[in-house]
Image (tube, rainbow, N blue to C red; front, side, top):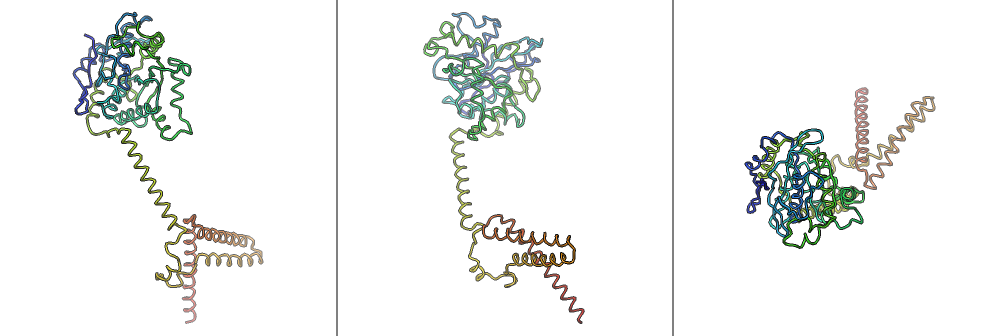
Length: 461
C-alpha cells in the first residue's frame, strides 16, 4: 500500500529526533532504484501553510505525467495526510513510500523522492527542533521548496539564514555552496498588480528582496549574502490564494471544483517546473552525484550529528537579541572608558605637572639628564652643518656643501615635527623616534669627547 513513511521520528518530550533506518532502507534499497542517481524534492516552512496539500498535487503529477495531470473536478486529493485547521499535522520527516523512476531526456534514469517535513514554529517545537528538521531536509534534498505565506518578510530570511547555517556547520562546508536549489513558494500572493503570478513575477520580486544595497544596515546585507552563498540556484514562484471554500470549509477534501481557477492555472505551471523530466535536479554532495544507496548513508551520518552535542544549540531571537544588546553595552562602556582616560591622561595630558614630578622624583643622572637634549642636539646639528656648508662652499667643494645643506634641512624639519608632537600630543611614535635618534647622536658625541680627552691626557703625559 502506498503511503507516507515516517523516517525521522520526533521525540516531543526530549526534543530530539531519531532515524528509522529500517523504514528508510525498505524505500531506498529496492533493487530497481538503489543504484540510480536520486532526485529529492522537499517542502519545508511554517506549520499549517499547505505543504502536504502541495505535495499531494506533486504525487498526482508523478502518477499522471501528461497535460491533464491535474485531474478531474470531483477527484479527492489523496497521498500525504493533510487537513484544514490550526493544529499541526506532520511531525518529523516523511517520505512517500513509492520511489518514482523517471527517464530524463538524455536517456538516463533517475529515482525521484518526495519529502514532507514538520512545520516550523508551532507551539510544541523549540528553535533547535525547527532548525534540525529544516537543516536535515535541506542537506538531503536537491530541490528545497521554502513554503511561505503572502510575502517574504525579513524574519523569513533570518530564519532561513539560521537554519541553513545550522546545516552548513553539520556538513563542515565553509567555502563552497553546500546546498543546491532553493525555491521560494509564496502562497496566497495578493499583489499581482505589482508582480504577476508565476515564476517570472516571482523571480523579479525575489531579486528585489535579496538585493544587497549600500544603504542597508550591515546585518541585512549579511543575511542576503549568506543566502546567496548557500545555494547554487535560487528561484521564486508566486501562487494565488486557492479560494474561500478551501480556507473555510472543514469538509474540503481537495476536489478541484472548490478551488479557484487562478490557483489551478498557476499550480499547473508550478509542479512541472519542479518535476518535469528535463527540470529534475539530481542530488549532489561535494560535487558528486548521490544514489539512493548513498542517500541512506548520508541520512545516518547527518542524524548522528544532530543527536550529539558537537553543534551549538541555535538561539531564539530573544536570546540572540539579548546577547547582542549585552555585547553592545560592553563595547560602548569600553569605548567610553578609553575616551575618558584619553581626555584625562592621554598622550597630550601629563599624569602630573612636570614641575611637581621633578620635585617628587629623583632623576637618574641628575640635572644633566633632565636637560632638553633633543632640541639642543638638533640645533647643534644645524649649526655644525651650516658652518660646514659655508666653508666647503667657499673652497669650491659644492657637493659636500649640498650634502651639509641637506642634513641641515632634515634637522630643521625634525625639530619642527618634534615641537608639533610635544604640543599637540599627536604622532607620538614619530616624536619618540626623533628623541631616540637625537639621544644616539648625543651619546656618540659624548663618547668621542671622552676618547679625545683620554688621548690628550696620554699625549701630555
